[in-house]
Image: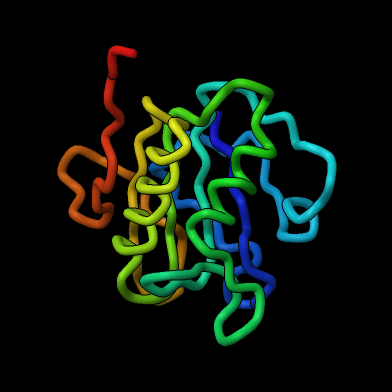
Length: 153
């Protein structure tokens, strides 16, 4: 199941499509839908593709508005999952450099809160110039940030 989160209200981000290499998306949510009190109730095992502007420390709109930190991002995504579940993978695609730093911050927050043990996290940054590229075995467009770990408690 592919879920797209548009975590920006900037015109160049809203409606950015996924490339044809992705499995067709099951749902797409705008920032107004994501930034609400009730959960979107996303099932376990979903793959979430995030589209936004980004820096080493925040994602969201370009400039000073709608800047989401790694811990806020974790809380937002977790809030929208079915209770007790986590996504299978998160692909964070931003128009901005250093997304690896932001994604690493998400990993650190997830580990500190003992969440998302098996969730894979990938980062991609490029100018908005077309569809979000699909991951593939030969692709160098997606940086693997966290491959999920099995831990013994």
